[in-house]
Every structure is written in C-alpha cells, then in structure tokens.
Image (cartoon, rainbow, N blue to C red; front, side):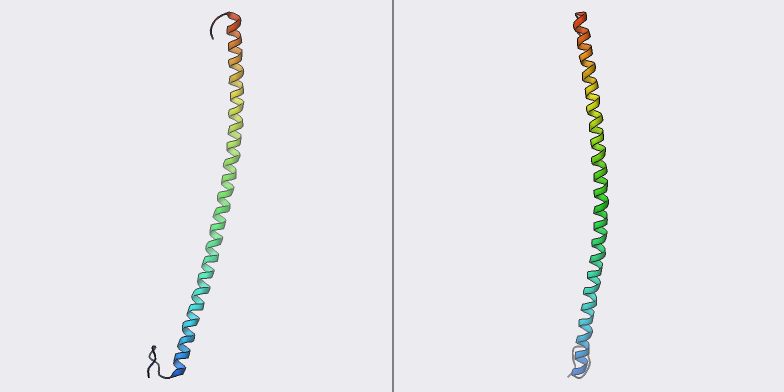
Length: 92
C-alpha cells in the first residue's frame, strides 16, 4: 500500500515521521528564540520607561519645591501689605 506521503513500504513512513518531528522541533526552537528576543525588547523598553518616569518624578518634586517657595514669598508679601494697611488705617 501507498502511505500518506506517496512512498511504498514501511521505511518511507518512518522517515516521513522523522521529518515531521524534526519540523516540529525546529518550529518550537524558532518560536522559543523569537519569544526570547521579544522578551528582551520588552524588558529594554520597560527599563527606558522606568528611567523616564524617574526623571519626571524628579522634575515634579523640583517644581513642587519652587511652587512652595513662591507661595511662601506671596504669603510674606500679603502679610507685609496687610501690616502696612493696618498701620495706615486703610484697606489694602
């Protein structure tokens, strides 16, 4: 009888089965390699994102400090104006 691959005899069937398994093994190895490379790319991108987020956090802290310093100065000036108005007897 003729096998599925068109070869006669049992030896052709075994060789065909080996070729099929070899193809499966090669496919699995290529897929594993591709997933490893993709994992590396994703990890690198996440590290870059983490670095950028740390930079943004640092900038936000710096801006918050500047804003608080400005609020202190404005509050000081408001106190000065209120004190000046109180000594003059008028509204600021």
